[in-house]
Length: 283
Image (cartoon, one colour):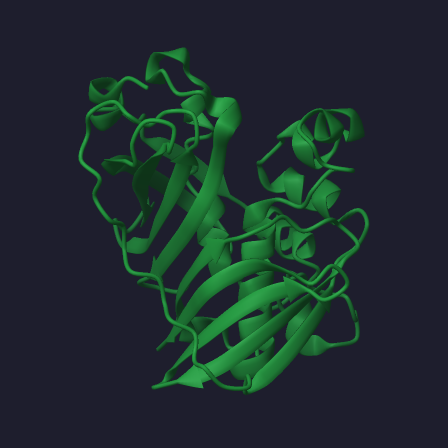
């Protein structure tokens, strides 16, 4: 890892034209419209009165998998998506011109053989009005890049889940072809489509995108707590724990806490947690 190069990485400003087709395709990638007669879900996949899923912010103004650039010095094959944070300032548009401005926030050196954590964020801006729509932040765990002499800085404190029975349970079934749909929203990593690639890195078959599982969390919160009022979901944070295989049922355990929500997601069939320390904030 080239610490100096990474710390001062000059991201190109991303300009994107968002269409209603993009908005609908993102929602379909999360399984919205599973019941095409459900008008509340239909609102996210039908152009008449179309609404944007709030978690769509994570794919807007996206700079791509820039850690593959040799100039970073990062062993990109060993990079894992650790955490995701989202703050929404205004309801997302269903179409328009978007600008994404990314930056490195800091890099935490966990030590030789222990890896490093790269924290980055992105402002999502409406190009026409200049309004800030959202702030997206994430951590990337570079397993092969610790011990460069940097500071071991802690990241944001994860949400604590209540020590009680969940207030709500929401099961969402994913389709066997879910990843093949979701990848059309921009993440074309063959890990999510090619069985040979998936097996080469230790998976039985292609896995679902982590950000698709994240989007399922938004869907579960909208369905369970907000009656699909997308304008009320203004924040969504998670820690990634394990991958989901397309076709699996994801179970969300949700707690209502002080006007917010805490949650985790698991795969009952495998008894594994896939999202942990989840937090949702409401307007």
